[in-house]
Image (tube, rainbow, N blue to C red; front, side, top):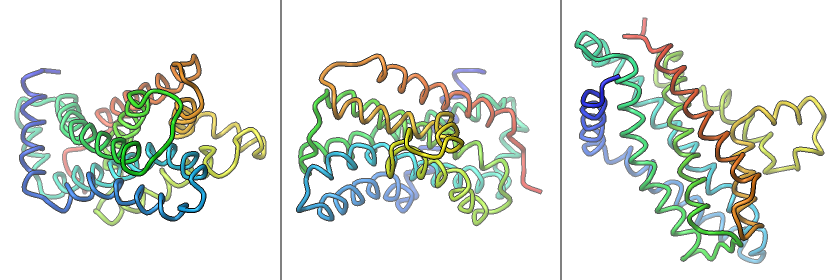
Length: 245
């Protein structure tokens, strides 16, 4: 990998995003709007919003970054841009890292907006530090970016990229502990949830919600989410194809 090539790739992606207001709106505004809607759904039960809202503060960015990243990467492959780039002295690692850096910058802004809104405008009540909440939200958004880059290698069209969402995201959403405690699930499902990164994202948010200090479990959860994101990025570089058949 080459730092100059990686940053040049990231700058190119950000320039393209600047001319795509719909994608920017999807990444930055949808999590904010969904959190606002959730707050008023539970208007009569603020404690329920505190419990679910903290978890969804990490889940919403993950989902939106997954969708936008997978579609944007596939669009570059189908248009031939990716093939032209890889014909230059640009390695797959440089390309994937550049995309991750660009969308990671967007993820920082997204996480800041969503966390700030939840805490200071919607009244999300957490015991722990807001900065720890922001850290988990950012790691979740980066994980969504990594998953989107990875699955784009297996889709032949933007429609197929969207179809990967039920296969990759929905099982994690059902098993992450948001709807039922993971230790009360059927043993096979409970074991499966232990290897899914979204479970640790939700657990990390729960730690911030209920503990004033940084706990060992919080450190474990954030390390697992970060490690999964790095692993998926490495797999994305290994499976990257020049073009879609």
